[in-house]
Amino acid sequence: MILLMIKKLIKKYCCWQEIFTLFRFGIVGIIATFIHIFSAWVLLDNLQIHNAITANSIAFLIAFIFSFTGHYFWTFKANKSNTNIKKAVIKFFIIAITGFLINTFSLSILLYFNVIANEKFAIVIALIFVPIFTYVLSKFWGFKS
Image (cartoon, rainbow, N blue to C red; front, side, top):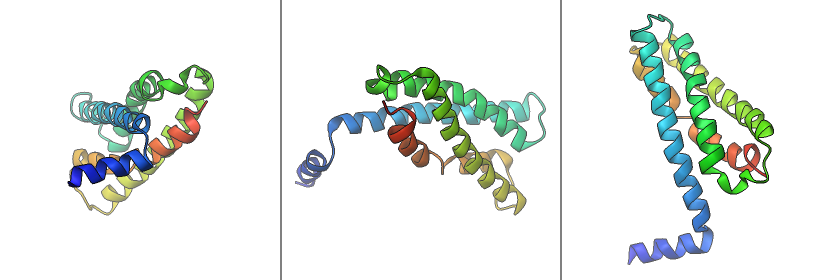
């Protein structure tokens, strides 16, 4: 009964294409987030970068490459034929940098006020706030045809 009501609401207020786009965005975002976290941790532990902000910045660039590629060619593929890749890269980079600044500000606050002492865990917590912002701007501006 409840599932039928949810299905009717989704059918009335959402289209399945939007749900699949959101699903693809989530998959790419989750993988990019794991790439970001893994890269930051490798930089901190194995490459002896002793600053979480520096490690986070380099990890962001690594994850950005994956994220843009995934979103351009898979998540928002319906818009790809009408979207100039150079413009899309610039717009998505602006979106990603803004998200990164939000992430870095959050990380800085967490570390400065010692809210979370473990740098690795603080990076994970700081990454949680960005996806909603990124999806909305990507959908309606970054990859819009």
